[in-house]
Length: 217
Image (cartoon, rainbow, N blue to C red; front, side, top):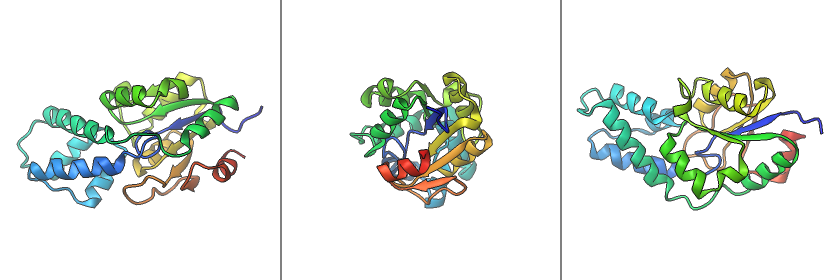
């Protein structure tokens, strides 16, 4: 079968699992207790970024916060894990899409800015080894999203040309990273905690038959 794409690269948070609302809730409490309440705009700016990059943003926004960057990143990752543990299933329909994509001969990968701590939990909890050929996280590359590194590394691992990869994302950082990698990108809005990302080739709300046909033909 002559597929339009050689590989489909999935972001995790907000695409595979509806974790972003839990992260936002945890982040609000966590940072408010540190005396630095985050605005919706600041939370939106953190979507799709790695904890290392996001805690650097927090320290830039609140320079009086007396915590070392490495320690804040460790605390931030533990807070995100608490949020992820509140998710009990994959987003509706996404497993069916993945199985259909793989049956069509395309490779699949998780390409997430989340830290290894979260990916390891999700890999076991949601059986990623059954659904994906590889999993790439922020620790595997020099730069997290919006840099293209994570997507390019995922494409390399599955042997796909970047221009023949489709990225499925929800955040603006992720869409920008896919564009920088010269990949097509579909923005999923069905689990959004913030505003829809701009600049995607497709914007879709559901992993259903109709949208599968529109995107994959």
